[in-house]
Length: 194
Ligand SMILES: CCCCCCCC/C=C\CCCCCCCC(=O)SCCNC(=O)CCNC(=O)[C@H](O)C(C)(C)COP(=O)(O)OP(=O)(O)OC[C@H]1O[C@@H](n2cnc3c(N)ncnc32)[C@H](O)[C@@H]1OP(=O)(O)O
Image 1 (cartoon, rainbow, N blue to C red):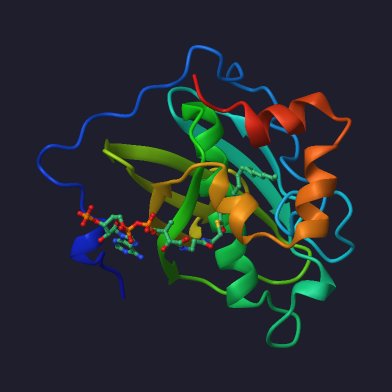
Image 2 (cartoon, helix red, strand yellow):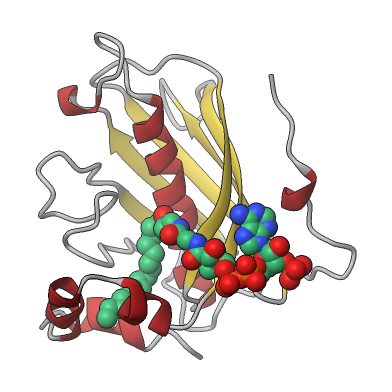
């Protein structure tokens, strides 16, 4: 079964996304935007440890290896974990636009079961932008980067101000993130405006 709800279809006045001139070059790893991020952070024991790199245009390529801690059914990845991998890959696209944005809507198709130890080869792309709305799509393939699609998603991200995090995040993590000695991560958190 597949299909995308009408809120994920870009309006007639949507424009093509513009890759920021300072976006990482194609092939360059993005690194983690936050070490405690479940998707990409190195400090999360059972996190996804998803490694993303810039593609051409406004595209991201990433890999994620399904661990035993990610099971739902015996020996198979939990669907929510696979949705997280898609969400994280789609979220990484915003760094190529130099926009801070959060997921508003994520529609996922689970096409094939994904066993533990499988490498999920992810690709995501921004398809259109309309004001604060960023439309994007992603696939996760198994058996190799050109293998069959196991999961796919369409998403709508909404651009937000940094205040979104400062006003809503727990105080101790906000303070710690603000004093992060890693300059690149700080830049990704605070200096994303062109
Ligand atoms: C000091 C530290 C600072 C740290 C800084 C960190 C930066 C690091 C970089 C990156 C971080 C991201 C990490 C990546 C992780 C992967 C991505 C995630 O998982 S993000 C987490 C999950 N998502 C949420 O938690 C959003 C929760 N939702 C909200 O906060 C709001 O609902 C929000 C911002 C999404 C929208 O709220 P509104 O008040 O801004 O906007 P309204 O007026 O409601 O909507 C604007 C337009 O968008 C449509 N819209 C909004 N939500 C929609 C939806 N769910 N479906 C369809 N349309 C929607 C509306 O219909 C409206 O459209 P019309 O302008 O009227 O045409």
